[in-house]
Image 1 (spheres, rainbow, N blue to C red):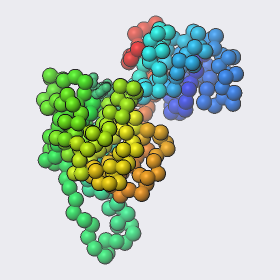
Image 2 (cartoon, rainbow, N blue to C red; image 1 turned 180 degrees about the vertical axis):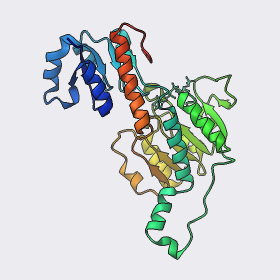
Image 3 (cartoon, rainbow, N blue to C red; image 1 turned 30 degrees about the vertical axis):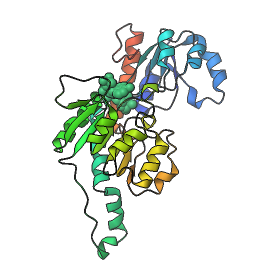
Amino acid sequence: MPEEILQTHKLLDRCERSLAERFTVHKLHEAADKQALIRDISPRIRAIAGGNVDAALMDKLPRLELIANFGVGYDSIDTKAARERKIRVTNTPNVLNDAMAEITIGLMVALARRIPQADQFVRQGKWLKGSFPLLSELNGKTVGILGLGRIGKEVAARAQAMKMRVVYHGRNRQPNEPFIYYDNLADMARDADWLVLIAPGGKSTEKIVNRDVLTALGPEGFLVNVGRGTLVDEPVLVEMLQSGGIAGAALDVFEKEPTVPEALFALDNVVLSPHQGSATHQTRNKMGDLVVANLDAHFAGEPLLSAVV
Ligand code: A2R
């Protein structure tokens, strides 16, 4: 008999096919009566594929051993509760670094050179009546990276290729990295023309980009968030964008996505993106493969490929 697993949200077709080849998969997100499904299958579930797992759900699955998250960020899983219950958690690191770094640079260029507005300018025939305004470049500017991790380092490499100066903030200095380290985020923002956020979500980083940090970034400064919406005090960000407190923002993530503050729609100094940092065929397939590989390893009694708990 195949093992039975619980899937908590929609996954890629290819990933779902791989799971179905190996396991009997119960789809929580498709169940009309979720509690009834959980009651029915709970004695047999040893693994979950997907995120959105809190302590209450763990408690309803007494044999749960593994949560295989789809995504490098695992802030939708209560890892403290998992650790206490000796439930392992895996994520999908590294395979998305390049895609994430590409969109980060893409958003920066889009914001600096107003590419979305330039496209509209041509389509709406405005070019026939006059030139597009002169704008700014990335080269020669300083980018401050919040979170010089696996993705942050790929962003740094590409920013250097754009002839930018790279500085970073995290909880720890990384002595092997050639970039200047700031132990204070506001100090880094003050020194930076661009502030790029690529740190994890969760309690320890919640609203870490607050009014002080945005004020330090200042009226000439640009913010790019490809990490988590929760990193930023969103109402303050909106206010600072409206008032010119910062120059602009490119946002791929939002606090309550897919709901985006409507006030942002009216602003000309923002580029909005639907959390698509890793959303390419090649990267999402690799992420799905890693979810399946972690489940395979677990049920074969082998070491997990990318455990976070
Ligand atoms: O704090 P450090 O030195 O461990 O640096 C990590 C930094 N970080 C933080 N920085 C400031 N305050 C914090 N409370 C804090 N917690 C973590 O974020 C590290 O440089 C970086 C995370 O790097 P990795 O763990 O290698 O993550 P990866 O694969 O780059 O992905 C970053 C995030 C995900 O968690 C998703 O939320 C998003 O990208 O897609």
